[in-house]
Image (tube, rainbow, N blue to C red; front, side, top):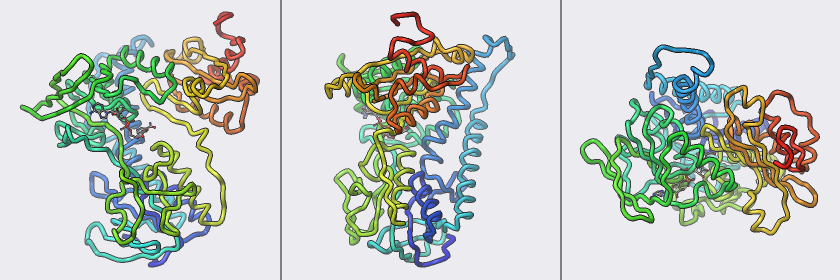
Length: 481
Ligand code: NAI
């Protein structure tokens, strides 16, 4: 515990994306800042970054990079005229690489904290009242109280437990253990086809597991633009994912070193026998024991911290950001922006946050990324719209890369041409969406995108052509398409 003061301008509880970004901004603004976090890595060392870095999005993406390479060598390398006699996989080394990379990122964050003179206090914290935090050291359990003018709660979220599938982390596992398996399961089932379930499926399917996704909803990725969801469903199935929709798991039990999973769909009851079962059914805010009962911090019935539009809790000077509140989706970059916003608010600034242009990404391969509104939502709202769609199969760079699956879809207002939504499925969609986010942030029209020069050959030419397609003048599509 490296505590240098007993009084700070700002104490932040939690060093995930929302917390660490907020700490850095507070320090930049000249506020004495402490960030308290209890995260420990596999070796028992304290690390910054929270679950997003250590066991969530970043860890998942790091492992997916290895899975993609393995899959490419197995399935695609011969097309490049490259022959490799035998490919084999050392999964423990793959996992070690992931651990090493996330460890390095965590250490870089610690370096940044040191440069900004932020006290990283490695301890368990509990809010006592609007000005005080109780701190318990991880090793010695030594207990102390710190004071602050402002306190920011940023403790994030953790996987929801499903009563019918108790996680033992040997056979029935959560999304954290799912990134640390030492052997590829022969047959794997995943409960939940949300972002977490799909990203994990993308990894283990590529590494050779027969992968079955059981999703209670009939409508696949229901919040996405439905044309993109349908395309995603088609591509995932083609990749060998066994996606069962309308399949509600009612029981899962370990029997004879396998898992028996019972689920129901329209046709009745079914039973599966698998080697491992991953539970990926959503996340809940980490608000248990965050505040002493006498602090009277207001939570809702699901544990979300109640905040106003400026992230103020019911306690004066206490804020909550990121996954802890019900504002917006559970996304690392959304939490980071909220952390920055609150730091600036404390320093007397007010730079409003715009959630309308929040990019969302699902890190499968191909990736899915979107910003703004969907076609179905705009139709439901009675908006007059026009749509431009461009397939990656008509993009020269995608052809050169051999990554032709997917499309770019741009939706603009039929009257004023303002871009209302951009939806992408395809390789590097997470990078391509940035152009659309910026365009929308500046209230661009589709004509603005169409008149912007895009480098050739790049994947971003597909964005350009989609904007042109909206006006029936795509360069690389036959007339009328
Ligand atoms: P989710 O709520 O998106 O998906 C969970 C799915 O599990 C739901 O579709 C639900 O219908 C299904 N389900 C629940 N109980 C079931 C049962 N008994 N049988 C079958 N299906 C069942 O939750 P997920 O994927 O765990 O993600 C949690 C949060 O984290 C979300 O807010 C997500 O947006 C965020 N996240 C975002 C990522 C990204 O942006 N790339 C990556 C990972 C998470």
